[in-house]
Image 1 (tube, rainbow, N blue to C red):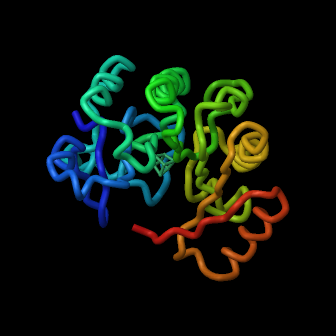
Image 2 (image 1 turned 30 degrees about the vertical axis):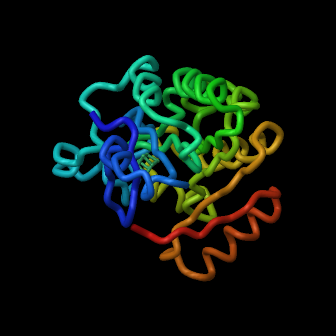
Length: 217
Ligand code: SF4
């Protein structure tokens, strides 16, 4: 079960293997893999390629418990790490309470450790409540997949089980996070075209968050 890992050029390495090379590890981003579950079925997501599901080492046969995750962290000196990122194979905020418990444990061990959540931004719909306030003091950066400049295209891409209301819920979550999380970033991939990226930039400017255009992997 691969819970903590490093990533380079699309290759995932178990943290315990990276950790043997101390020099390599300095300033590394450490990723936390806690679930395969997700309310979306994005057309570009590796989770939806069945062969990859079974062979990819990020696939979890069972979800690690909070105790199992913190036991993994106990093996390491957190000062060596640049940022801890809840990312995983699925949507980490599906396990909101567990994620917050792990974040509390990490902040208790080192209050300066930076914690980021990479998310689809649909936690409010998943949990049926406003979730952004719960991130206060625990999460330093929320990186939300904007994916597209409008609700229809977003739904075409994400195939969210919550349907057309997903896009507005994601944007509402992003705006709410601004009150509780120091850095709120929306992301798109670079292959969507300049016009679409410009429109996404305008959306980010309007709601007052940063847009990050990331390479499509
Ligand atoms: S939101 Fe992320 S994890 Fe979920 S289907 Fe889309 S790409 Fe995959």
